[in-house]
Length: 545
Image (cartoon, one colour):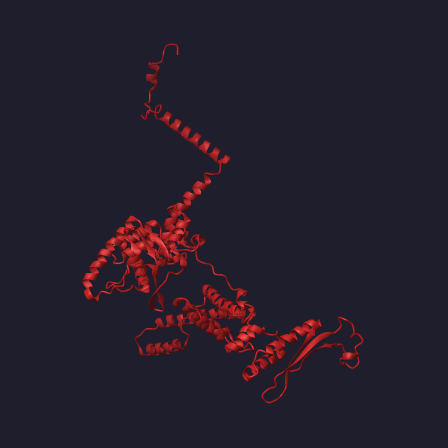
């Protein structure tokens, strides 16, 4: 098939407006004209001709390089492969129409051999489906990706071409999510107001029943209560898209990841706060928690453990409170990895929720595989629990389910992490203590270790963190007495003249007060000073005085 390069002058006759072409007087100037290429493409099925043409090259060398590139693409299809020839011809025709860059030869070869579309019409939805199908991660992580894709990404950007996805498209998507949040809040408020109004209508009476029926019908027509997409979820949606597009770059499907450059609201992680007396008083008055993450003081932790001392799962609450295991790690801890003789246990598995179902899984991270040292009291607690579990095994007999787990239901079967959380919340409410989450017991364990002066690296290893910075940023809630001691120790390091003078004046004042007291009490002997009458004084006065 024919192809050529040629020079082209775009100058026009000022009178006629027509291009001068070869008659341009400046045509022979070295840098005046540009170069163009034209390559004939295979004819269409109806016999009509088509070609690729483009210009604007600054040199003959650049034009010839692109022409060779086009011919290399045409050569990818074998002579006995009419379907491949047609696909490449249609791809080059669209490239010519859209004036888009020429596709890479090797990427086009890969797509052709893999049966993929050559003209770059792969949509975001098609790519996300392919990417998700190829992920080999644990099920809980896969479900989270699937939710982000199904709920947020596909409805908003799924129909866009993958190679044409831009930062502006993603900015529009997150703006749309924020707008949807505002609508959800408004819908929820309207539904709540309607329900509250219906609650004020009495049940008795024909008119009241008719009114309630009409109001209920109106409520049923309203959108149901929904949760908004918070900052953390939006960040996760962005992370999901960024990861998928990075893989697309790795497979040379695209060359730019717009999710890396889109800006959205940052997530501010709540800081753990300690339930001080002042905060407890305010909570009792208003019912509001100062922070989503709250930590008990050592006294409050002790009070809770005393309250649940007879609970069947006391050993679990004790272990989490002192050693900081995660909920799933505690539920999935096997006896085979719990050595009470050496005062240690090895965290090597966990139970995780998939919806409401549960499954065994590896620890959350590589650093989650760890050995946790146990104190004497915790070992004694676990020994007593093991004896009680043995009694349950005998009681259930053949119905006992042998899971090998430390903490189980009464018949030996797995504990459900969600039910464990529900039980903990009921126990906290019954204890009368200020509320915390089950995971906050883990925060408390870290705080107790740090308050005891344990090295931050040991605390981090005990909790299963990959970096001590995570421990500092999330779990280091300073208890009031620890902060007071630190403040006093810091103040004593700086010698202040003013402070020395104040201390000197205080000592002088104390000395003066002591002297005055001694004078008033009879030379400091502690006895009241006896009064002497004038007659007695005259009697004992020496002569001549």
